[in-house]
Length: 586
Image 1 (cartoon, rainbow, N blue to C red):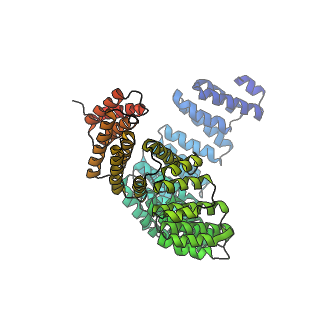
Image 2 (image 1 turned 90 degrees about the horizontal axis):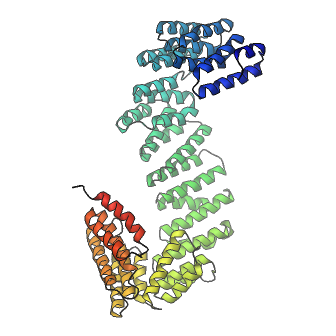
Image 3 (image 1 turned 30 degrees about the vertical axis):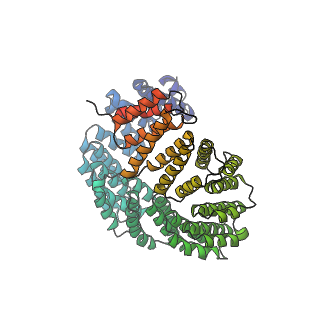
């Protein structure tokens, strides 16, 4: 390391910079006394070296030697009296030394030298606030605002906002952030972030302070906070008139930001407000941006479940010859999706046939398969089968498998599922097909129309009817001596009856079904081993949801002891730990 003597012999700036770096490293390792020696040596050769002065400001207080800094700062000011950094350092040092009168004198000297600057007021107030003299700090900032207000809108508003937040006065903080954002609209995201964590009990006062502010920018800030706090509808009611007052470029930016924030809420109401903002954006931007904004607005309405509102927007855009090709494609795709969701399948089929090359081939194929799934849910198996004719994709094979299964042709369904493999559709789809293959292997019939009807009933959303139908089909298998197949069907019925949100009667039905599966498995027999432990695990989970932890523990322990080789034992052990944690301590 360079010592003080070496520094005086080699007074060049590059060498001093290297020495400053070594002093900073000494600071980092906690050797403040060694760092102070180096900084003082630098200042002997260069009294106005700001890095060395700031270094001493950091290292002298832990050593109890801060007073040594004051004459060095004043020596630097004697050489450069207009230097803002030196002036700020003098104010901070005097305040830290608990010499408020001297700090005030230093700040006023700085103000006299630079009457139009915020710096003197800011540093003076910050020093007072650090000493927890908040009222005096606020008075300094307010005086600064008065002095500078005529020449600089929003002067010191950010500092006043921060100070109000430190004092816990969030209403005043909101007013000051409104002033700051009005003077500099690019401050709005920062203001929203600073105010977003206001405690629920103070939010009404904060939003009222902003919404009642005459400034449209302050009102937009209030709207963004309402959005962040989960009230999209009110947020839009505040935001829309406020953004109308803005010029087009500023309005476009504000609308895009608001739309993105609303969409990020992930709620139907948030998506609807996103759509409103995007539709308004389309009114203030030129083509082709306007067309894309309208398409995005319609898509947001679809995501919000408002198909009726989305449809006319999409229909108008789909035939707009001035819209860019990608916006038209998006509109046509979304329009077919909207028609499918509205269950207007004939109109969706006709629209898909009419779009031609305006929608990419892969998207057309995906829409076609969505139509097939909708036909299947309606029980229109023949039309679904016809729509799949000539499609050799694995996705089509998977859909043909479901059509065959719902018709009761288990062999054809299994063959199609195997042809589809594990990659058709999403991962959830592959898991469902695998479960159906396992079920069909247990049933051991090539045709079983009653089972197909039961599964189609489930696919159409009638869970109660599906449970009843599955119990009847299980009874048929039991009569034939197929205990394993019957157990699997009863297990499926129990899982459906025990789904989250099921009512008390359905939960009782589920418990009865699980008990029956366990009974069948307990009697032994081919193919019954896997269903019984799975049923007991589901039974225990149902009991846990019903807050019957002791009964759940009993079933889980029985499962683990009775079926030690079962694949569900690891899950059962995890559930057992959870169940034991839920048992009240005696």
